Image (cartoon, rainbow, N blue to C red; front, side, top):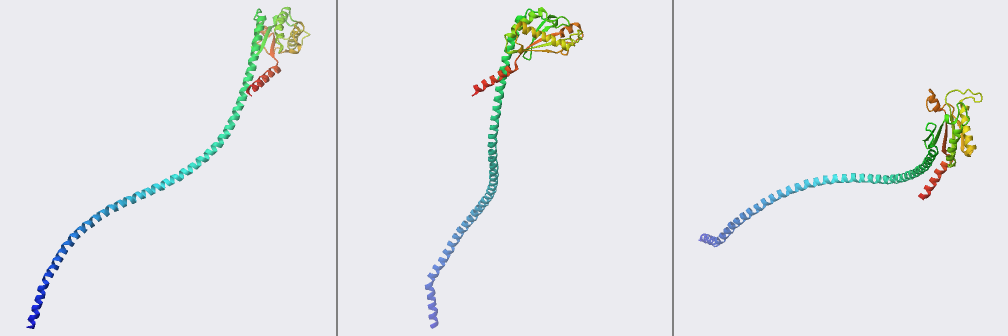
Length: 303
């Protein structure tokens, strides 16, 4: 009986707990359903995170690669900057040297230009002096041709050589053969020459005697040297005594047979070589004074 009681009591207790068990079972079933859905959701999230992580890792790798490339480029740029700095320093140094050289070269150039200006001034002064002398020479030639224009060209010849006026008088006009006595006709010609010479007191007169190569056979004349000198001094005496040409302006000289115009191989050529030259030339000291005066005037004008 006691056993039935216990059994019945157990049955009752079980009967009483059934709703609770059912409830727990329902909860467990529901919990099992909820956990599976959450698991599925979490699994999806995990897959997405894995995919995102893969993308981020790829991006990270690209960034790292870009970083490495930028770092390499940066090193290259640093190297280039260093090289440029060195080059710039060298250029600045060269510029400094060039400035120094330019200053020296400018100074040298200025000295050279000053020297050139001085030389140009000297050349201009000399040119002006020569021009003035040439003007005097032209006027002299014009005067001589004016007074001697009616003479035979074979007896009187007027030339200008290197700025000097030459009057060449033939032997047949001046002297008889082997003589140094001036003919009357020659005295008239010398008078005309003296008139022009006296109008040019700043010029000197050189009289040169020339002969051919025929030896002199007169006892009072040693040779052609003597004959050429005697003829030159005879002309000078006529100019001095008859026409008052200042003796201090005149020089007499003999050239003998050694400055011929043509070969002494025919009578005509020998006649050509027998001549007397009257050379009218400016006084050298006056010519130099003319140059110095011109240079002084140019220097004063440049100040």
